[in-house]
Length: 224
Image (cartoon, rainbow, N blue to C red; front, side, top):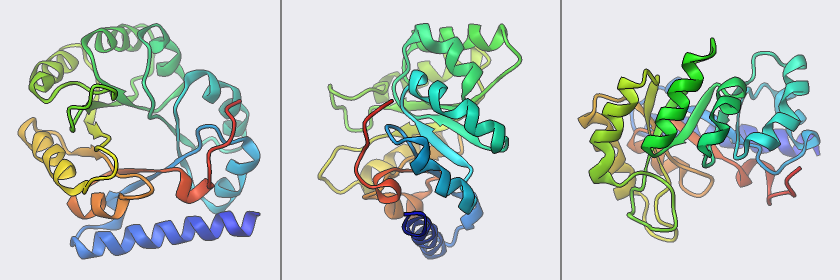
């Protein structure tokens, strides 16, 4: 089991490196987020042993059950919240996570700003854009992005960049390119985009953070 998991990790790292080379980018400019949501500690530990230190979770409650004990053994872990966040969970998220990826509405910006002001933690934030204008997905509308960026800056949020989930079953490159343009237009450098099926495309277009789950862990487990 451990050998298989670490082989997957090595393969993903190699593919990221190749995509970065094709785009004449430094592989060190791409952060691999191992998406451990719904997977138990037993599935996470082999990757920790192999040296992976950046992980992504979808839910505050699940992360709070799994990661405090793991972080005692691996204090250099960097934990990213990649799922939708309820405003009433903002303080818990600020306390637990090092980066929050799905900041997508004014009420959440306000809640995170208050939570950061009340604590000594200031996790980086990615503003999520509904890049395909899909009603079932989170993210702010492209037209609303300038106002959200302005509000996030006014609230004192450390804005790392933009995040998106392109529409399924279509070529993702145009959506990644659009997100990259929006980031440039707003003076932002971080791009959280690309998952197991399309991360190489994302890297060639400028992704700074790729969120890899199934390619590392296999099918989703049952959430704790």
